[in-house]
Amino acid sequence: MEINGVHIDETYAEAFGAYAGRVTITACSKTWAYEAARSMTGFGTSVIGCGCEVAIEGIEPTDTPDDRPGVSVLLFAMSKKAVQEQLINRIGQCVMTAPTSACYNALEAEDRLSIGGKLKFFGDGFQISKRFDSRITGNGSSPRRFWRIPVMDGEFIVEDRFGVQKGVAGGNFLLLGRELPATLQAAERAIEVMRKVPGVIMPFPGGVVRSGSKVGSRYKFLNASSNTAFCPSLRRAVKSELPEGVGAVLEIVIDGLTPEAVGEAMRVGIRAACGPGIVKISAGNYGGKLGKHHFHLHQLLAEG
Amino acid sequence: MSPVVLCVKEIPTNIPLEAESISPDLFVERSQGEIEAMPVALGNETYRLSDFFTVEGERSDEIVVEGCAGRVKWIGSGMTRGRVIVHGDVGMHAGSYMRGGEIIVEGNADDFLGVEMQGGLIRVKGNARHRVGAAYRGSKYGMQGGTILVDGNVGHEVGAYMRRGLIVIKGNAEDFLGAMMMTGTICLFGQAGIRTGGGMQKGTIICMRPVDLLPTFAYDCTYAPVFLRILFKELKQFGVECPAQANGLVRRYHGDLADVGKGEILIAA
Image 1 (cartoon, chains in turn blue, red):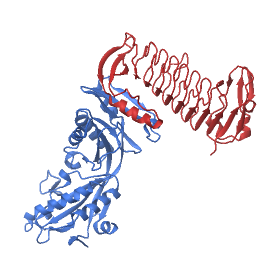
Image 2 (tube, rainbow over the protein chains, first blue to last red):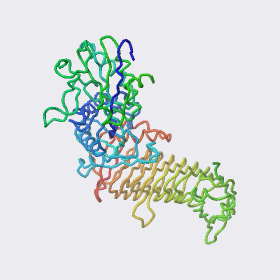
Image 3 (tube, each protein chain N blue to C red):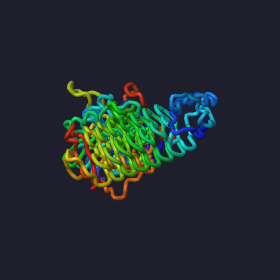
Image 4 (spheres, each protein chain N blue to C red):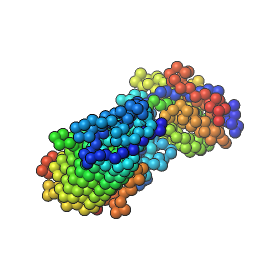
């Protein structure tokens, strides 16, 4: 298969099941909402080293609970407990500390984690609960409880419980380009359109990874190491996956609330990336043995 | 499912009619004949519902009450589902002990509206009298959940001993609003009477007009709590608009310092 003269490898991306949470952060201005969100999503590129994968969702929420400017953040981790720990730490240290901010659940799910119910203790006994009937909040059958925690600029509002659901982490594709500048431009084109897909994040810096990894290493203490098969400088030193003429490889990793969202993001991203300077599009997998979600590139692109 | 329509016939005396049987939970599985045969009390005598109401419809959790029901007590008491629409006034104890569903009163409501309710919604388009959402004498807690919206004025001791829930009053309130309140929220758009929040332990009373506070309330600060934005935004879906003079800034007082003192009265600045 070829798109715009770019060869699409007949392979698939292998992704894993993960648990996901979604929060809406609001503040007095969009600037401060983004400050809080950027702080919260820092050091959240990979579950292996960061404990979770977390990023700002591309689509801004149009309707926030307090009608202030808001930002949506998606967080993925390997267990519900890990989602809870990460949300408590990141909201507590990064959102609560940001001036004028408030933090709300933005994921309706059967399973709900106590987040505000833990952060409330920061109020040292002066925290106040506000529980509004579902008819008031329009929240299905569940009432919503908010905690008002006194802070130095007034009070921090955080929702008591946050929804958690199964999601997909590790959807990916690889851009194999002739040289780095064109490959990076292709990645930027892909990220721009992928951010318009609801329910997905690309957790790496700017959405792009240059240090793709393989499982294991020659060192006992390291579980993952550089994906040497895709490193241009090692073309002659290891069994390389790079065709002749490829001088740079970038990867885009996608986490999503549903397999459909991940597939859609991959589809629009690959289509946008196919352009001058790109030789081939491929994807990373582990032979199908580790992840339960397989995104076959040809199948995805044929659907669109 | 078409509603069961009850039309009030003439009640022969001034003695109020006690009609706890007018509840969606009790109507939903009954035929028209069975509904007509349900008991109501007038003084110490028990009568059939059809002695005082014409009944049309059956097996519905929606009830429409037509005519003058201002002396019919306990309508919707303890209901957990469905809807009761009263085209006119409603008597005492309407929606007391209610746990779910909705009561809409087009006219006025008498005393003890929504007393000790735990869930659901009561909307009164006219005035309501004393002890809305409060506790019965001797009870520990008043309203423990749900929402009461009153478009007009309310009487004394509204929200007394309240523990959770929301009362919104678009008109004025008489004395002892939120007295002995435990938690919950009362929002008053009009003028409050005296001793607002007297003895309150926790909870929030929001007043859009200046209030004569008890000396056991202490001023904290003037600020714009975000939760008010959430509250007013959600109230808009019921057609309750925040008064024009409210700019989000409130003066916060905490009290009642004669008790626990963790309650708050927020007065629009």
